Amino acid sequence: MKFFMPTQVISETDCIAKHAEKLASLGSHALIVTGNRSSKLNGSLDDVISALSEYSVSYTVFDKVEENPSVETVMSARDMGIECGADFVIGIGGGSPLDAAKAVALMIRNNEKSWEFLYEAADSSALPLAAVPTTCGTGSEVTGVAVLTRHDLKTKVSAKHKIFPDIAFIDGKYLLSAPKKIIVNTAIDALSHLIESAVNTLADTYSDMSVFAGLKEWAECRRYIEGESELTSAAAMKLMNASALAGMSIAQTGTTIPHSLSYMLTYGAGIPHGAAVGAFQGKYLKYADAERRKAVLDAIGFGDTYELGAYISKLAPVAAERELLERSAESVMKNTAKLALCPYKIDEKIMEDMIDLS
Ligand code: NAP
Ligand code: ZN
Image (cartoon, rainbow, N blue to C red; front, side, top):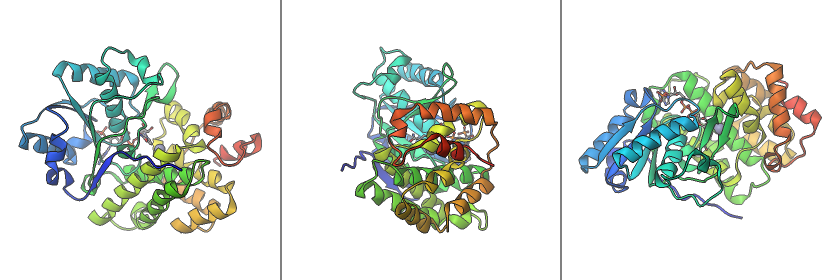
């Protein structure tokens, strides 16, 4: 058994202002890596800039991270970071800017390397890194994973290096202004991480600790996810914590079949990550060991996997061409590393059932 989670997690309202010295102590010039809009509107970018300014730490902002960031974007941000002399990186946003920030921190530290280095197995020495999540889905602030779009391969592929942020600043207030659709899609991503970590050959007592704590937080937010109640500050904090706990879980076990099936759907049909992974959760759990299946369903208040699948597809419907689903299934059936993480054997019949989204 092992449990590795080297990120310091600071989770409370106004945590950046309250712990500004921790952020400022990471270096003398920050490259802030973020998307083009939301971090300016939800206050997270201002909070980071105020904290740095309080300690006279200079910064440069790269605000061109797109959804499902590409290797090309990482390399542009890397160039900017080298030019401005950045000695640490701060990622602000959803999983896209956070994943990009990890890859940028790696590539600035290894500035003589070309982009292919991202996909070489090597010791991962990266610049110090802080992460400020503003969605409640990926848990990227506490994982070593950076998922990047590879236009050359027409899909998304994670970098080989494990780059954990040094500090994660988790504050639910950034979620309060997010559109419902983003909250729903990302909350389904967090749930998917918890399910795929629970039903995983690497699951053990330690990963279950974060899985079941995360499922409990998630279940307590159902009425907000379902849109029955307006999101409160307390619920936003809970959703963020569920997402971080889910991230800690996949940091131990990895994601498995549903995530692998999703990548081509996102690349080929533009389906948001959370919806694309959520589409396969009911069926993935259906074939799990009966006791484990019941433990997961009980934790989130569902009677059976059909009910869970119908619930997810109502909140985040996915319409994908049959041909795309088949192509994705075909590539997953060849992915022996991912198949090995699934505790039951995926044969043609089970895969056929999983990709049947009707
Ligand atoms: P995202 O792609 O980071 O962002 C989606 C959209 O949400 C963007 O338009 C973004 O706007 C907006 N947004 C972000 N925070 C907001 C807020 N508080 N209020 C309003 N709008 C907001 O979404 P995500 O689902 O969090 O991340 C998905 C990415 O993470 C995928 O590439 C996926 O593969 C990856 N992922 C990584 C891991 C991991 O362990 N590292 C795990 C799962 C998924 P702006 O562009 O303006 O910021
Ligand atoms: Zn995910």
